[in-house]
Length: 369
Ligand SMILES: Cc1ncc(COP(=O)(O)O)c(C=O)c1O
Image 1 (cartoon, rainbow, N blue to C red):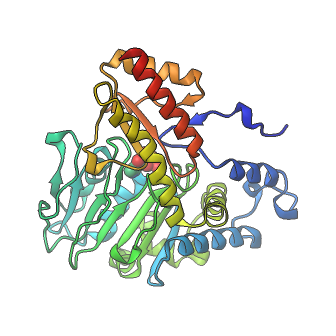
Image 2: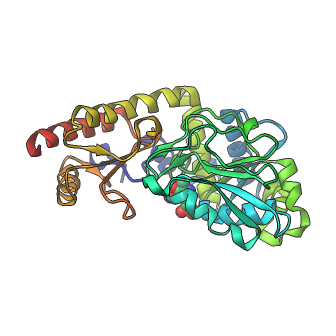
Image 3: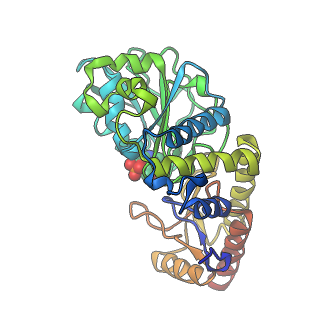
């Protein structure tokens, strides 16, 4: 059986999300016997030479793509974005009196903040609730605490469709970024951050692998105080950076995604240009039919990754999603928190997929407007 392109749809899912076809084909080719080993990656011992090479190659590619400075570690963990909501305060807050600043810019910013009170004081440096998270803070609007353990922000809010183009100045307080729905979609100056993390299943792989890029001094801050799997230090200091059996197959897929970005796309600056072009195609239709569609995000906060919008009413949203599916445009239903329609146009969504969506949106607005 071989992969046939004509059975595939344009998958606008927010994650797990669409993968590049060439990556799927490489996985298929490797599946029964990875590079002459006579076994699949899923069957390789994580302590064997072949898997250690995969692990090192994946971490090296992440470092190259993001030009990660030497004083940062790259950890490939389990537990998704959610586990980082616990590991961060547990490792970085050193006592119950200490606070951490959180920017509540949407569902994920809020979720990230929820476990902080187990470890210290939560300072809401910005709360976008009153505008239903449709905008981002202006410079000067943040209520930062200069003694905070760190400042946490979500660079792209997957559900509310708002994305930072500039990162706030936090002085000596380390800035920690949840980049789960955008890592590898554009260059990032890692030296601006104390830590950047992302679950892989949106823009950098499949579910099961979580990428944590963290500065060595922050790893030491948790030190031996933090138990077992939850300690960054234990992961960073373990042999081959494997404290336990890592998510071997997802790490291999992240490596293939990085290879695709390097060898086929041409790096993250090029990826960003393509993502800007794709997002423009979608937002242009929204603006052309602004009497019919309503975007959720303020124009200046619009995400290049998740375009969230509404037709005139919820029944019409449902008709949109159902009709779109007949045009091979899949997974456009908005998240239950917000409703409406959400088009996730991550790295692997081809321009043709976005153009097909734009054509459909245009025709739909004319027919139902
Ligand atoms: C921005 C962001 N952070 C965190 C998460 C949670 O990731 P996980 O489901 O891997 O725990 C998600 C998932 O959608 C997300 O979009």
